[in-house]
Image 1 (cartoon, rainbow, N blue to C red):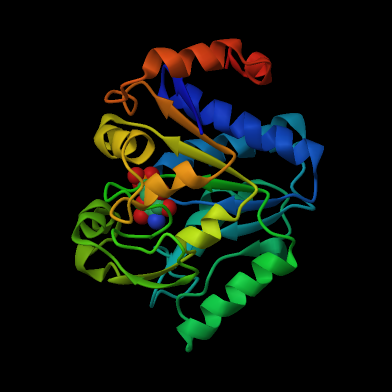
Image 2 (tube, helix red, strand yellow):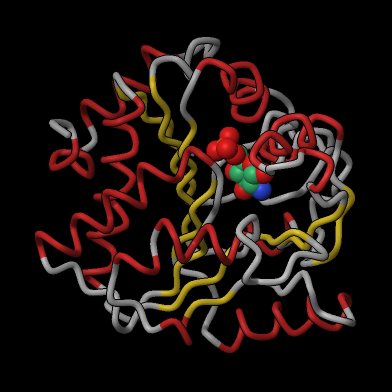
Length: 263
Ligand code: GLP
């Protein structure tokens, strides 16, 4: 795992956007794993700008989102399908048929989840998985106690997640109590993982995830098991990290990061 600390949420998002753009230029048919949440809005806006101003080409790219609420139609304004259309897909030249989210409105949710896993495999697996983290420590919607070997499935949302996400609904009580989510095991199969974490309210859970013990109580801690995971944070989110000088030293000295230090 590498931890990169940037001065602001803006520069953390820009570095993440640049990594994705560079990977897309290198492999135009890349399969991206995508995340939702407020943290990602800035990053998606940056990718939209790169498409507009630099001709960043999404036409061959395939995407799989981490999760979706159970019981919301894809057209519901609060669905993650709507979120993705609004924040990314409508701003770039992606072929909408190449974009995948689990369908939380499917009649047979177990079948839907098994098909989702199959489609990921048929696309050759996920090249880069983008992640945020919830205050409960979840990646995707893998709430505390999610097995570190779990696959895509329906999951009950925790009170912490309800408190975090329900204000986004016009009537907070309309937030579904369940979601379909890639499992921790599914996420760990991505070839590369980029996690973006910003803001002081994530500082404690971030430190637990990257410096604490690996535990099903904090699914973000499972990232310690991944061979190529880069965690990009701003100073606020990095507040409680204990080995900051070491992380900064690596970022300042590894040739891999030469092109990214000034972002
Ligand atoms: C949501 C999503 C996660 C996301 C997290 C953080 O509930 N399921 O994939 O990373 O919560 O959201 P935010 O960026 O709004 O803090």
